[in-house]
Length: 211
Image (cartoon, helix red, strand yellow):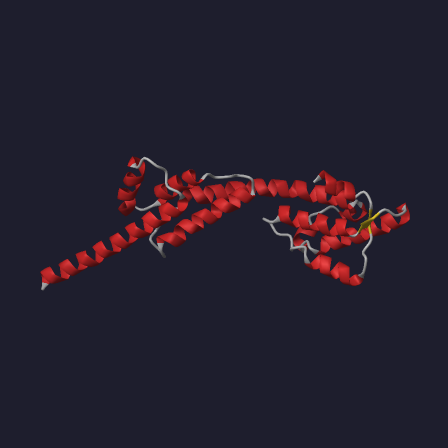
């Protein structure tokens, strides 16, 4: 990343209006969860229009670069930056933005982790979708630099299941090998089907006995 910042010490001169438009379209709109990828795109776009010219042109080009960057930032985020941000260099502006998003990432990490630990399966929808929802949260945590091993996620899923799936948990705990997430999904789907069949059979027996 220092290599990119070194590039920002030079001038940002757009080659043509068409190039500016094409480059700007490649920058995603900044939101609360994509700062890292957004910043990488910004640096790539700015670096692609870099040239070593005199200070006067650098000063003008720095203002143009800031305008480019701010176009991809929603008004809600821009409004939180200080009034003198237009006078800062692109590097200073990105540094300030990164510090603020670093705080947001910590809060987002805590929220996602709490959501994951507190999840409980309520038999609404199928169990495969439920497990994939937990896996999706784990992927978001990984993007926030909190990597979660598959075996830990497997444990969290099993803990979150209803009492009817206790037999599956016992089976896993007594099994010699650890399950992958895909194996867990397969076992859970099979158990879900078994529980549905048992429920249908029980209802049939109850109806027959009444008859």
